[in-house]
Every structure is written in structure tokens, then in C-alpha cells.
Length: 386
Image 1 (cartoon, rainbow, N blue to C red):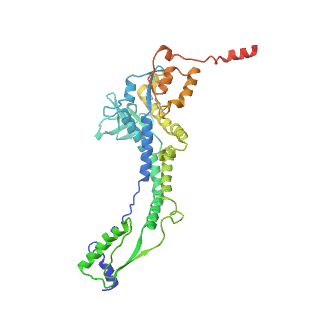
Image 2: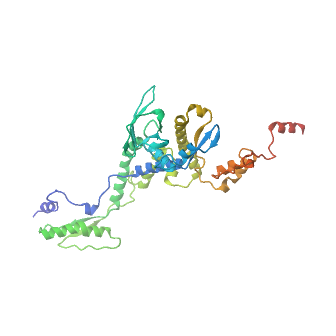
Image 3: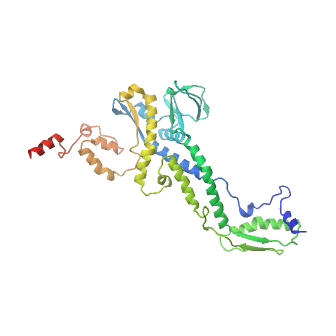
């Protein structure tokens, strides 16, 4: 039998394929770094907003009545406020839009819907699905809360960027596996037996014994018979430098996280858990990401839930994000002292700033001022006399 016939005998007669997956393993063609980065951004924003407090006001005075309970404790019979607002933000950030239906005094997040736009009258929402239940009702714009984050769905932009960048990651992975994988040449003599037993032994050698030999943690020996020889091939190894291949795979992954973080206006170091300049990163996160999102939510709720007349009469709600940061009481003690002695804060104001219940007494609501502070007119007159 010729060498060509021997080579052909190794192929499966039915599928005409050579089963090499047991030797070289399988290379995954799909990577999920982008999805991990997107979900990390969505969860970070959702968790941050869920920690905020909806404050309700009547004629300029803060109150805690039905709307406060609805927004902060139980927006829906099946979801508490934390779960509900996480779901809202997840839809809003991930899908770029979110529809909330008001029904029987509660709020419900729509899983899907159809929106018909009109230029000079209210938009109409149909085919609304909530928890796999499709509603037959048609909803006008004034009957729902519709939140829209951007003019363009940001996730589509990220997907387009990633389709190109994923090729670089895959190429880097292939190069790493190529250089880090052991290789060798198995020499099979031309007079190797063509019996069924001999072919089964060869198949077992390739699929099982060589696999155990390559995956051994320590020293390993593989016995070869029938004149076969194995020669280890020494070529390039992992760490070889090159234009794309020589770059660390982790660097490509960091790029993906940086791109996604920029798209969602999240500081990349927060997304990746870096502790350097955390305070500055948190401030930027609140200023450029969370606070605009909070304003988006409050504007829609105020115009639909309260209306123009109530809002102008200082009856409204606002989303307070000041308690998101975990602050040690010792870090703000001096600041609270200054706020009290200049009359900006009362004792109750300080307690509420720390997340504590106010005392609601006459003296705790009073404003205090140190004797060092006097009206500017008195200071000028006093200086002239001196």
C-alpha cells in the first residue's frame, strides 16, 4: 500500500473527515467581552439610580405621602422600588428606551411595545406586552411614562465597533494558542498494518494517549510501537513580539471596556474596579452619567404625574442622588459644623444629610449662626468708625 493510501485510510469513510479535535482542541469563535462590558455598565448605572431617593414636595415643603411610598417603596405589586427602577434603567440604558404604564395606581414596565409618532398630536402606544401578557389597550402619550436616553441606540454603535475589534482579539488569541501549544511530528511507517485492530490502536493513540500526554502536568512518557516515532517541534513560543500578536490580550479587552464606558459616560476605572482617583471618578460618574439620567426621569414624571399647574405651584418630585456615595461621618463632620454655624443647615438638615431621621423639634429646625458673622453693612460701618 502506498503512503497516500495509508494517509487516506485515517479519514472517516462516511464523513470523509479527519477527527483532529481530540489532538488540537476546539477554538471558540465567539467572545463575550463586549457583552460583559455592556452588562457591567448597565448594572452599575441601575444600581446607582436604585440607591437614590425620590423626594416629593407640596407647595415647596417636603412631604412623605402616597406618591413618596409609590416611588420609593412599592411602584408595582410584584416589584419593590429597588427592583422596579433597576428594571427601568436596564431597559433605558440597554435598549435606549423604556415604557412605563400607569394602571390602577401602580406602575408597570413594558417588555415590548409599538410606538406611532405624530407631529402635532400625542403619540400612540400599542401592542404593549407586560410580563408576557399582551394588552389590547391603546395608550396616548399623556397616559404613560416614556423615557428615551439618546437619539440613537448606543448599543448598536457598540456592536458595530466590536464587530471589527473582535477580529483583533480573536487573532491575538489564535497567536497565543499557536505559540503556547506543543507540536510534534508522528512518523508512521509505510508498512503499518491496515487491520482493524491496528487502525483502532492508531485512533486510540491519536485521540486518547496523545491527549493525556500533552495535558500532563509533570513529566510524561508515551510508548510507541510498530516503528512509529514522535519528534517534538520547537518553534515560536508565547511572548513572541509582533505588531498585533505581540500585544497582550488583556490590553485588547481593556480597550473594549474603555470604549463601552465612554459610550455610556462611565469612568473606565470604575467599570474595571481600579482604585486610583476613585473620588474624582465617582464625581464624574455622578455629574455626567447619573445626574442627567435622574433629570430625565424626574422631568417625565413631573410633567405626566403632577402637571404644569402643580409644578409651578412647587408641588413636584425630584430624584436625590446625594446619598449614593458612601461617606464616613468623620469625613463630613467639619463640613456640617460650618453649615450649621453659618445658618445654611439646621440640626434636622444635618441629620437628613446623613440619612437619619430628623428630630422635628422647634430647636432642631431653627437656624443658628455664630457671633463671628454679622451683616456686611454693620461690618462696613464698624470699620469706618474704627
